[in-house]
Length: 484
Image 1 (tube, one colour):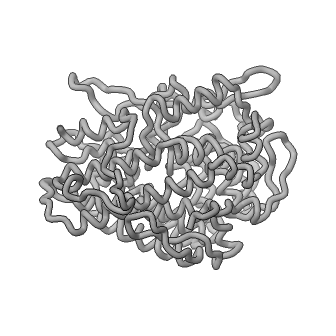
Image 2: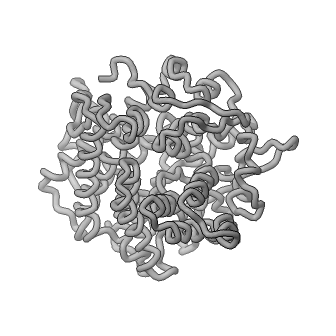
Image 3: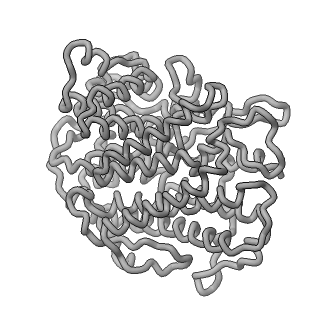
């Protein structure tokens, strides 16, 4: 089967492949069965992405579910969502949510470790140049990225306590997790893996040249689908996210700026990711072309979760939605939210069944096929905000403001533009504008909680308009009992 067809339809897969099935000792797989040819390595890599889209991880808890209620974006409707909103980790863990996240994240990491071990020691011949390096690079990038996600969840903010110890860095396949290490040590290991991934991907990843306008050869990676996987620019974006997390503004801007090279260096018709502009996104209400990396979701995945939350249960947005979006022309406000009366709103558009990805693959007749929404993981908006914050904190305020203006212009808004017309912006003005953009840009993506945590905000706005006093206990998820 051609690689283009295989990758296009990972979006429609509804169950995990069996490569990760464990033997009776629960630590190994039948290597001869699963790693006998080039396609088996692709299957192993695809299975890791498949694991990430389950509800325990980014299919719900770490996207539109638990983290969004912790970020106060939605009004709780039952004991579970109330526990999320109140940071009641004892109740959350009583339901098994933290254990599910911990187990499935390390399961995916273990799968990446197995893939790394096998591909670095295989005698299998890869028939397309660079394919082996791309798969290996993605595996290293996934291992680093998932460890960083665990760090953001189960350790306090780096600025608060860089020596906090709770998580292990897992580099072996199996169920033995290993000894926990400090945040500083975790960051060093994460950075090392991301740098290695970048070294492997940069000479080989077709995303650097943009969409191939010619038919893809059998077994060749289709560049138009690279944002469904940890491509080279997803790695540079992650390196920017990590650098900002530790307060290394120079490196954060360096990697953020490099990520935008795709838009600068590739002609418009061949760009794999780019800013949508008003009127150009069609039915793609999640603006998937702005995703540098997003996780494929089947029709009964994120879409069904969204329909249940905002269609059947009418889970409402926080009360100050219109204050967050004072300009009704902002395409995020127009595409994502619907009024249900009494000044109440639901986020019924962004991941709904009416929202479809467009122009990612072709049918056998050459027509464009639409696919279900995918789960955003890291996107242009975040990278632009990383660049803006890094510039602003290094006293390059005018440049920082321009990054914000470019972002808001793509959304049909002019928040910073109007401010700059009224007065000369200082560092505090840009900080405020960045904070406001975080509140607008990441609905349903689980990022606003991490923003508050990274900056160790002592007080945040609650969904009902009141304020919540925050501390390390609320920001730091407890490691599940017996997890180590």
